[in-house]
Amino acid sequence: MDEVISNQLSALMEQTLKQILPTNGYFTSLGESVHRGFYAHVFDTNRTKFPAIAIHPPVEDISGTQGGKKVTAAIESQTTLIVAALIEKENNAYDQVKACVRDIRRALFLAREEFKQIASRDELQIGVAEPDLSRDSRVVMYAMTASVKYSETYE
Image 1 (tube, rainbow, N blue to C red):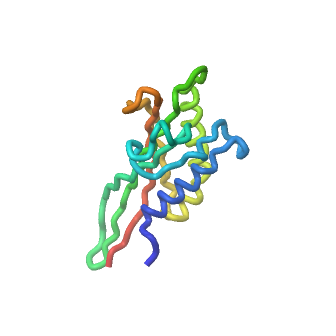
Image 2: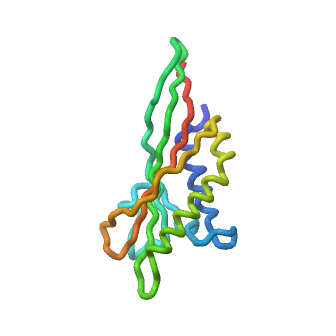
Image 3: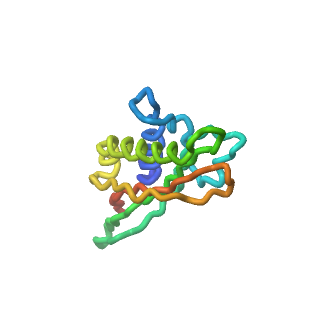
């Protein structure tokens, strides 16, 4: 049996986001600090290189099923991405985070075909990017979602 589709999608998302570097035509070096897990577990102002991104484990929703002995479920996997920048002297962390959000959108949309190969559908959707609260006042954060729809068959 192959790897679970949601794990394949998360791995592709990580691989795609690691490409966000100025040498690849992006505004930021976000690709140098890509982490999978909840931001509260992976961001540490003393050890994390900023700007940084946390790829939260996805929320999965079944939107419908069909079949009898062989059941196919339509699933939407929605991943929350938390982008963070550290407020330091004379940097504009807010502008830096907004540049990261733009870079993320570009990277994910340019990888649509790779997502389609895993999900077998062209269903990549990028949600609203909005400011998020940090547990550390030295960190500026934005949260956004990326979702992919795919099917699983159970026999």
